[in-house]
Image 1 (tube, one colour):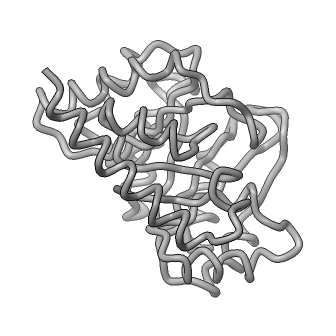
Image 2: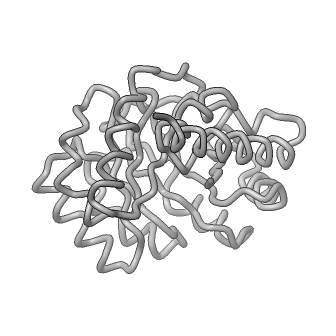
Length: 227
């Protein structure tokens, strides 16, 4: 189970310290939400923040591009130190096809994200070309939103496709992820968990990450054993 605290919930005045805190707490990845004020109404970080964080930690930086024109950002973020980059299916199939090629050319793992209102069938044609499917469990743009339980069938469908097609992509969830909702998602087949306020607001981050990882692992096995 991959636990990826989201820097969006961290202290914006102390990015370097937050990155070190996350690494010391034994997280698997650091998740960075990149918002352009157009694809989503909020604006967050640019490549320079990634460059600063990269200097402070060796753990993978998981970059989620909530942007209308990610094609102009892929190379700057890769140069800044991004380890994996995720783009949105809502940009359209033709554009997603080109973006997958561009990310591969940069020798980075490919992620594809889907928002709550979008039907899961939109991502199926791309599943054999991606390393990660990010299922948004809130509508993107702002942290601290409540989990949308209606997204759980999407996780189940993605996991069914992964098994049937014998693929190995991660199923990542992001939005309202707490100990309880991580368990719900893991039972459905998720294996990577982005959590902002659910983790970074905990007084003992290392213990919280370990707890979420164990809860998710137990729930994942429980889901596999369901009739």
